[in-house]
Length: 144
Image 1: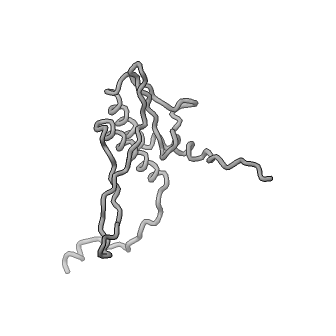
Image 2: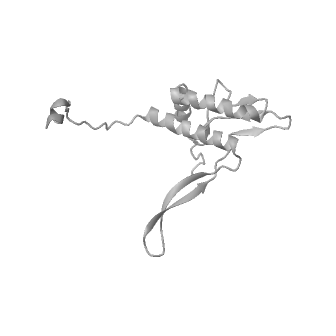
Image 3: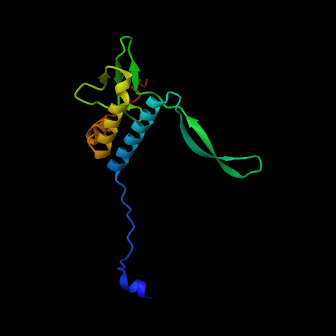
């Protein structure tokens, strides 16, 4: 074949290495994307696809709505405090500071988009790694 003679044909090597830092970036960016959609539409619910057996024993895919919790809260004076979470943990944005104060809800989407861009560029990798390095609370009850 003339086509095969014109192409470079190397040995296929599968990439078995999964980069955990890259996976964390993707997870954080996906969470921020959900928050952007929730800020734009308060009734937004994420949909997970699950395999469910029907009455005949066949398996079919069903979309199940997942509740998305807000990462921000509004105070009585109209200001908004926004936290960034990785899973259920709040990321520490600066030493001892874990929230961003916004003057109104209108600033929420642009700030979340900036956080998403920073997460995709890897600027928040150190924050996520520091949060994951903290140990979880262990049951400290004394054994008698």
